[in-house]
Image 1: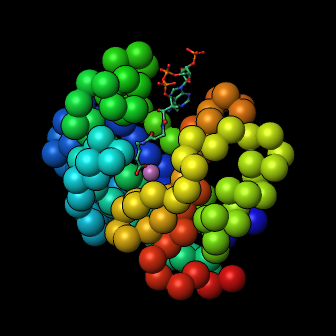
Image 2: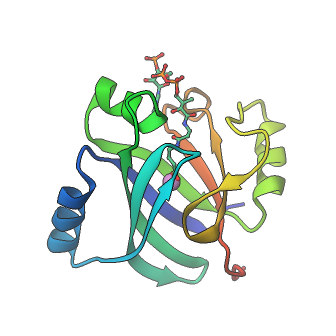
Amino acid sequence: MFLRIDHIGIACNDLEEKIALFSGLFDLTVVAREVNEEQGVKEAMLHIADGAGGASYIQLLEPLSADSPVGKFLAKRGEGVHHVAFGVPDVAGAMEQIGAKGVRLLDERPRHGSMGSSIAFLHPKDVGGMLTELVQSARPEQM
Ligand code: CMX
Ligand code: CO
């Protein structure tokens, strides 16, 4: 079902500060910056590696407002790992397959994600406490 880990999402209070930290510590390069109003975030993607199933990234996320998902998370838990995103060949198909197992889908249909991808979230309470994102990359995936 999964091609790879596409990215790990990290909740940050200050995006620029954490870009400097992660790129400095691990020698990573920022390959995309975006504001995603629908998700309530300002974000940066730091490229880690290209694998057989596609590339993987660290996604740094700063909330646009306190009542957004990342804003609420920061208030409750502070900075740190917010979600894990798996690359899938077909996000709508994966939602259907996983939803049929009783996992609550947080999106009725795929939404716009980083770098032109299509994404959907699964409820953390149904995935062992891990907020899970499904990502269909804009580029054709290798299988
Ligand atoms: N990881 C694990 N558990 C989480 C969580 C997270 N990131 N966020 C919330 N939870 C837990 C909370 O701790 C809480 O548990 P308790 O009831 O035991 O305290 C429960 O889920 C409900 O959380 P809440 O604080 O009441 O928040 P909401 O229910 O309003 O929202 C969630 C939680 C997951 C439904 C919401 O954050 C969401 O819809 N997320 C998906 C969208 C998103 O995160 N977008 C930003 C990233 C965009 C991107 O990656 O591109
Ligand atoms: Co993400």
